[in-house]
Picture 1 (cartoon, rainbow, N blue to C red):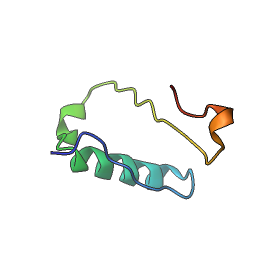
Picture 2 (picture 1 turned 90 degrees about the vertical axis):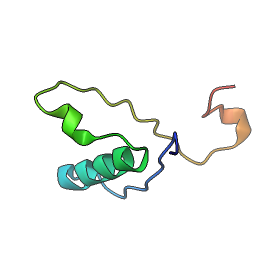
Picture 3 (picture 1 turned 120 degrees about the vertical axis):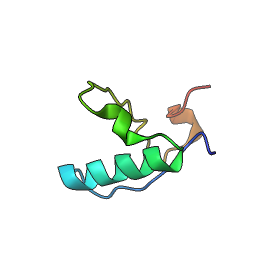
Picture 4 (picture 1 turned 45 degrees about the horizontal axis):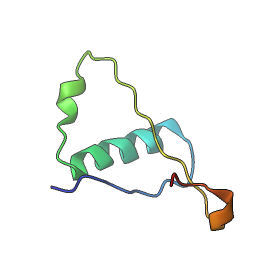
Length: 59
């Protein structure tokens, strides 16, 4: 089972985001039924292409 799922999302439309999030959870083997009546926070890592000097990623 992979520990990371990367999926490109070209817009921020709610239905598209939901689909990408559910697909990503499925890719890592997480059953989305566990969300039933639960409050969940998802912290995405939003990155952009940049030179190393910009320190977009953590060291």
